[in-house]
Amino acid sequence: MRRIRPRRSPAAPLLVLSWTGAAGVLWLWWLNTPAVAATDSDRLVNAGRITGLLAGYAIALVIVQMARIPALERRVGSDRVVRWHARTGRYALTLTLAHVALILYGYALQADTGIVAQTVSVVTGYPRMVEAAVGTLLLLLVGLVSAGAVRRRMRYELWYHLHLLTYAAVYLTFWHQVATGSEFVGDATARSAWYALYLTVGALLLWYRVITPVRLNLRHRMRVVVQESPGVVSVLIRGRRLHRMGAEAGQFFRWRFLAKGLRWSANPYSLSAPPRPDLLRITVKAVGGHSAALAGLRPGTRVWAEGPYGAMTAARRSRGKVLLLAGGAGITPLRALFETLPGAAGDLTLLYRARTEEELALRDELEAIADARGAQLLYAVNSPDGRRPSITAKMLRRILPDIARHDVYLCGPPGLAEESYGALREAGVPHRRIHHESFEF
Image (cartoon, rainbow, N blue to C red; front, side, top):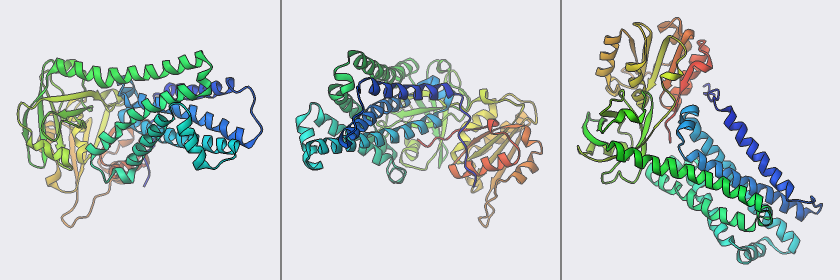
């Protein structure tokens, strides 16, 4: 199966800026290292200093990637920002562990003692080392619960709240670094630059994760209106001047419903209909505790939202003809696009993959939209004996002989997305015209 390659990044300048910052951190070490010592112990300590500085810088990037900055989310795409965050977190944790191991081993060689004795000596004899030890343990815990094998067995709500311990770990390790790092203790300029980095990161986090959601929700005062359909629940959310939120078809919000069992977590759900000035709608398949609980919401329940997020909007389109390829819960953003994407009769095609006809959510709406717009609506459903229709290049060329001249919006489970991406590329659709976004947060 051909794996989906990351989208060609419209954010290359951001990557260049990040690597430039890393180079600046290495330069900071170089300026504060008069001579690179030749002994093994000194080389180990220097390596520990380098990895510690890089770990501190990587942690700042981790926080920026958690801040949900709209310009970054829309330019790069929320799914890619999440992948960046996960990858940078692994780098930060690896560098932190390397820093601890190298420093302790180097100091043990210098003092001619064992690792355990040296660890006790460092933790009890240096300022802010207790905080550093606790912060490192918290980072380890967050890294452990974020590992795929562990996270898949953990409720999203539990994982989410444990993940918030990252902030406590950052707070503790930051003060250790500025109090004991030789790059900062004797260099006021370097210390000021480090403070500026973390204050900027903290300000972005405070603004976009706290102040912006508070302003948005006080202004729009959203409440649940009605829920419908067993198994697949649609939640209508009424509010004031919702058009000023700037949401577009294809985007999503992180929703927090202020009801028992739901108020302590915010889950991402896509808009399943074009946003209106007084009404938003999400449609959710009951596949977990949170999504299943939405069916029990009562009209009038207060709603707290963050967003809009996501880059899979009409702005990505570059051709007149469009194929929307959906599977499972991926139908929700594509249903909204199916209604709103500009196009003449015959320009739009929606291919919807499901295991059974009963799992075709929003079917009546999709058929009504197709009839009204002269669009093509196709289903790929398992046969009665369970045989699964494969999405292949041959199949795509059969239903759309000019598939290579289409833009494609792709949203669905990872297996379907990878299979479909490979078939699309084989059918001649350029990578730049396959627009996909994953919502596995």
